[in-house]
Amino acid sequence: MKQRGFTLIELSAVILIAVILLTLAVPSFQQTIVNSRLTSASNDFVTAVHFARNTALTSRSNTVLKSISGTSDWSQGWKVETSTGTLLKLVEQNLSNVVINANTKTSFTYNEVGVVDNSETLKVCSSATSNNRIISVMASGFVKVSNGTC
Image 1 (cartoon, helix red, strand yellow):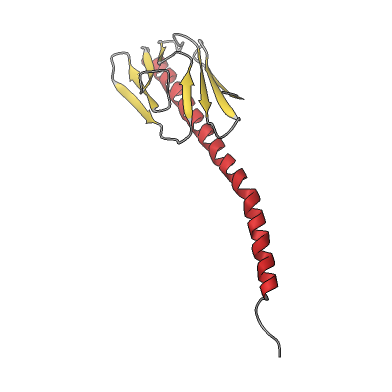
Image 2 (cartoon, rainbow, N blue to C red; image 1 turned 45 degrees about the vertical axis):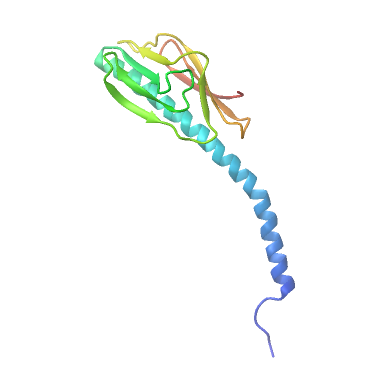
């Protein structure tokens, strides 16, 4: 008579292999999540920079990109306003373990030709990885994102 099913040894071997694979996959997956958050925050900021610059160019007037916190910590988010204070766009960030800091700038003002008042470098960092992002806002108004350390 033939028996159906798995023996205890076969079942134990499959469980052992699954545990080994999960042990290897979880740290890699956590790193992927952190990198995704850093990329998302960087892309959101670059989108806001482009929006502010394009608005200044099309409206032929000053447009301001400001930190919500009013400090050089941009982690909470940012807003784009006209020079008269009319809110055009608000981006609130709520990404855990992601910090966005500028050296000193709390805002960027784009003039009618798309040039920013002063260049600045922002660091998008996480304590969970060494693969962080550096955002350079150049005086010409253009922006560059590169990998770097915080």
